Length: 369
Figure 1: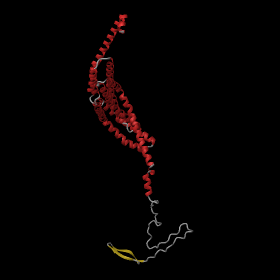
Figure 2 (figure 1 turned 45 degrees about the horizontal axis):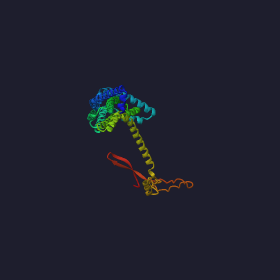
Figure 3 (figure 1 turned 90 degrees about the horizontal axis):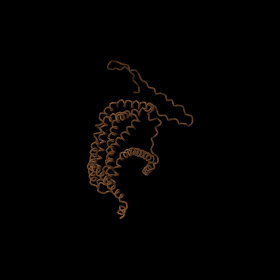
Figure 4 (figure 1 turned 180 degrees about the vertical axis):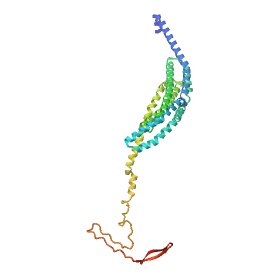
């Protein structure tokens, strides 16, 4: 009645508002139909591009020639690092540490340079396998979500969510492409850093390089998991699940940064755990004497432990043959008596003529024999 009364009182405004409402609704409906109609094509193309541009062999194939060129100058880098390590060892007067580090890290750097692409391929295949296990077929999920969007009535809310999903899917694809570029750069710089492992600062940089490579490689698992979770919500017929799925898909673009932030925290946590283990070991060793078992063992031990017997005064040496033993004079008991003088025994004999195989010889024969 109110609408009819307003049309009767002001027919021009009534006709104008009704026309504008109809035209606006038609425009919004047309745009929503256009966007939701192309959603299937865009999402399917995004899934195919994700599968093609994130394969493990793409990174290693892309950097193969550059890796060989960079690895060709790694001997010079190793020589400079060895020279720096020698100067550092001589400055600190630590030759043993210099020899130990040279014998350990120099061969390790050579082996790491040779097997670096192989290990990188294994890490990428492991990340790709984990992403496949936790998410399943992302292309099929994208297709199912696009079908669900196309089957929904073309309203403004569906238009907004469709645009949001398309932008989020495109952002994820761009992030995965950038992931491949970052992995390629990290892999190309690996020979420069790994060849200098004999130098202590280079070892810290190499550890951060490996940590960053593993974190970026495993970021695909987080991206694909968030993408799969968002697509599962969008494929549902429930409106709340569709909204949650679209929001999850939009927030999935920030998962690589979360992984990169968590990786250093994990390494620091591991270092703190090892430090805590060392402190607990030292404290346990220091407090071992107060343990009940240690006390029980100490009570079982004799009060006086046996000791090594004192050596005899004559040190175990036998006396001279034919000379009687003389008592030792007392020590610190008045003036010492003079040393006993014993007359040497007198032995008599006579010269004799003996014969051997070469003829007569002179000899001596004792009378007491």
